[in-house]
Length: 316
Ligand SMILES: [Zn+2]
Ligand SMILES: [Zn+2]
Image: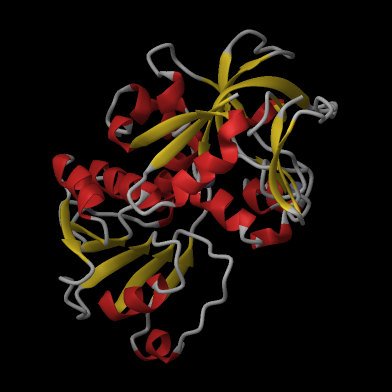
C-alpha cells in the first residue's frame, strides 16, 4: 500500500506498507481525499513524537462493515468506551485513546485506513469529496459553540487568518456573533474572510488594548497566546485552538491580574459540521489551495506551510 510515512528520518512516500490490520471494532476505508492540517505540519516538526502514517482529515468509501460502499468521514479519537471518561461522554479524553494520524494509530494519507466503526459518519450526496475533507476541522470549530455559552452579544477576536481561524470565524458568525474581528497577517486570506462578511484587521493595525470578551487563538504560533492576553478584557476568556511543537514562554501574571479564563479546545461534533457544509452555511471552496497526488505529498506539505496557502488536499 502507498502512504505518507513519518519517522525519525523525516517524511517519505512509501509503497511497501502493509494494508491496515483491522481490530474487531474497525472498518476498512478507501481514502478518496485527505486534507493537510496545521497539526500535520507540527507533527513533522516533532510534535507528539508521532511515527507512522500521517493524516486525520479525510473522506473515503467504507470497504467493510455495515456502511460498505457508502462515503464516510471519521472522527479521529479512538476510545476504549469502558473507562470513566468514555462512560461519561468524554471519550475524546480517554487516557487509552489513539488518534488517527496523530497518536499510535496510522492515518489517512494512504490508500486505506482502519477506523473504528463508531467513529464513522455517512455523508449526504450533496457534500462533495473536496468539501467533506473539511468536516473534521469544521467540527473542531463547532467545539467553540459547545464550550462557550454564546449569547451573540460578545465582542470576539479570532487571531489567525489561516484554515482554522477562517472556519472558527464562520462558525462563530453562524452562532449569531456579529461583533467579530479576525486578526491576520495575510491580506489575501483576510480578503476571503471579508467576502464572507467577517471584519478583519492586519496584525499591524490591531489595537493592543483589553477590548474583547473572548479571544480565540488560531495562530498555530507561540506568539498567539501573549497577544490574546493583551487583547482580552479583564474577566474575559481566551480559547487556545491550536497546538504548537515549540514551548510557550510567557509571563502568566496577566492571567491572574486580569482574572482571565483560559480554555483549551480541540475536537468537536461532526453532525453540525456535516450539516453546515452540506447546506453551504460554512463556505470552504475558497479555502482549497491545491490538490496533489499522494506521491507528491512532500511538495504538498511545503505548499501547505507557505504563507499564502489555505487547505491542500491529497488524492490517493
Ligand atoms: Zn486537523
Ligand atoms: Zn476510555
